[in-house]
Length: 170
Image (cartoon, rainbow, N blue to C red; front, side):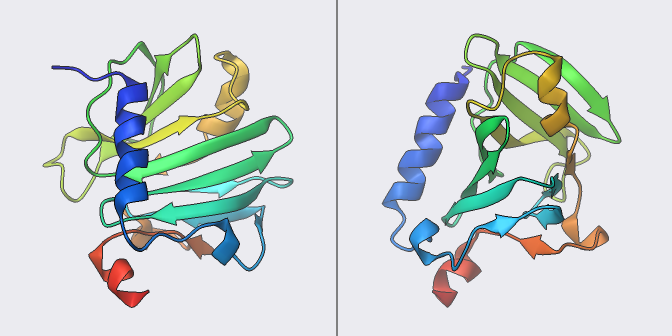
């Protein structure tokens, strides 16, 4: 059974809200400003000049950040347990990172790649949506900056993670 992206996002948000230890923008000292390399558990991206991260929420199996840009706002969610959404079409495939358009009416994207837990198969670990996306080639300006790879292989200037260890620290 395939779930659509909205249902998967609702499950992620419900999960994050039910987790007793969540961080939010009120706990961030200040927005994180680009340009810099931002890492997650299974991926990283380049936060561009003029972009900022204004919110970060995490649980034991997922996290989300909110990015403000000149194009609008977009949300990035990473998890190893996303329900596989129905994918519209692939829009990019570079260096083992596959970007899929999930819904062209309300542009949403899924990003997949090989991870430490996926037995050499590409799995979806990132979901992106927001009013910064138009469903056109313009979205590649944002999407091409994401890479699914072990973040320990790159030099990260800022890291947002999730997991049981992080929950017990707070």
